[in-house]
Length: 40
Image (tube, rainbow, N blue to C red; front, side):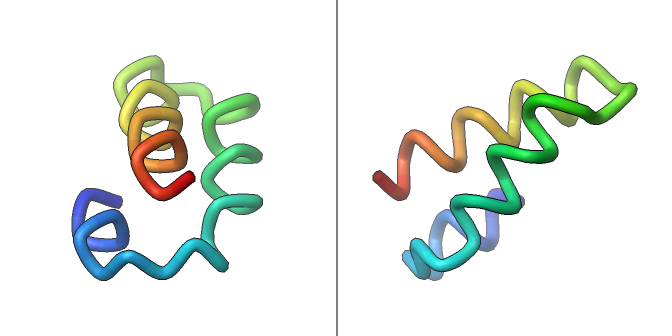
């Protein structure tokens, strides 16, 4: 996910938001949220 953030493609934001809301792993949710926020 960090790599997606560095690529700067905001097309992945909706998927990251879904992961941030639904993944079972708290660390994964946190990284997804931070990456989505970085891209927006």
